[in-house]
Image (cartoon, rainbow, N blue to C red; front, side, top):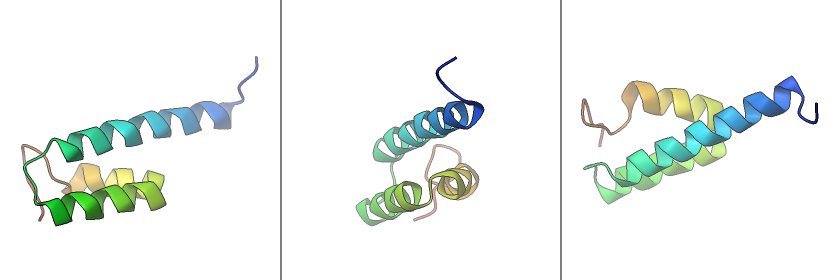
Length: 64
């Protein structure tokens, strides 16, 4: 087994962060809000992902 448990969790978080960034880019939020959410996710990967999931721009509710 080449990957340890922490490595697998890191890969899952990376994949979810990429998914969130793609969803942010495709959202109807303003350009400023998109940039802000992407920066939050890049600098705080896990916390940013959770915050985006709770409050971020999407079809159900957009914070801009």
